[in-house]
Image (tube, rainbow, N blue to C red; front, top):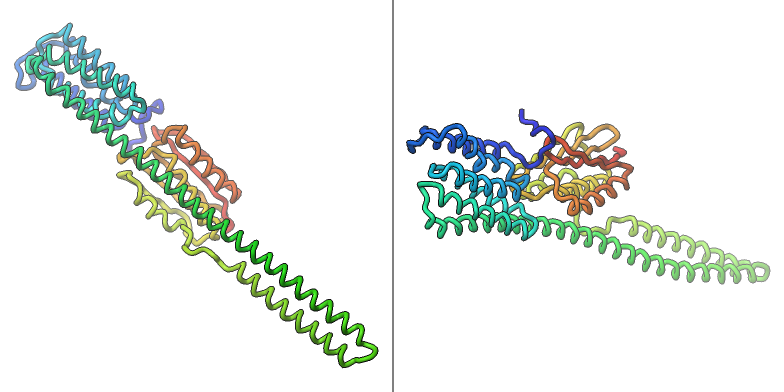
Length: 375
């Protein structure tokens, strides 16, 4: 079972390493008569040709550094081992590096520098490889630029998706806040009306009590009627107050709040090719506040992960007799962009007496949030 690279190397995937090894084997084979080309370059050329293929294993981890090594490798192979066929393995490495530069470069300076270094690599190959000619630069450079643009379009799409998801969460929270403010305003208006109503009823009761006291000696029947009036007014007032309190306790929301059972729908909305949900323990319906907060915690933690179609995301929900533990694992986004989402998740967990923990391991950044539950 694959557990990740040692030394905590992020973004060095098995696919990248496998692709680099395949290109390296192809390059060495082409230099030593093991392909359709009858050439025997020797051990030194076989070692130096790896500078044109092996660096792609680290392209996603360090795009600009990879392009620099590829450019240097192209220059060295041109100067030291001229007139050997290497393009079958070296050009695919350039195209892949160009795509990664476009999709991973955060600054335009890095993007331009990476494209320029890859162009230099193609220039060196066109002058040193017998299968190529200097004239191929006319169409080879546009091909490299096309891969850079394709990667940049993917980066722009991923960035837009992240911004849209964050905006959606913000709008949802704003809608909830607006609903809470509207409910609070209604409660304030009801309280004001209730205060006026009670003031009027108490005034009527006080007037009836004064009239009954004045007529108690001279007209017992009139005093009795006044006291009956006080009794009826008191009952009517209590009935009205019970109705008001019952209305305040009723749920005023117009749509159901999300619950943990809807996490599968949340994961289905992610652009990730692989998003897995695991539930352990004894699943049960928790108090509404815990259900809503648990859903929101997972939602915030997903925003703290890298938004990529190739990202692997795992969400685990563990029910125990006294607690609810939520674990979200996947490649982390940049610290600056993930900090607000982590802060929001920590605040949600703290409201329920829970904690939020983050840790890194096996080339992945995990977000783990636990929220205490009474049931």
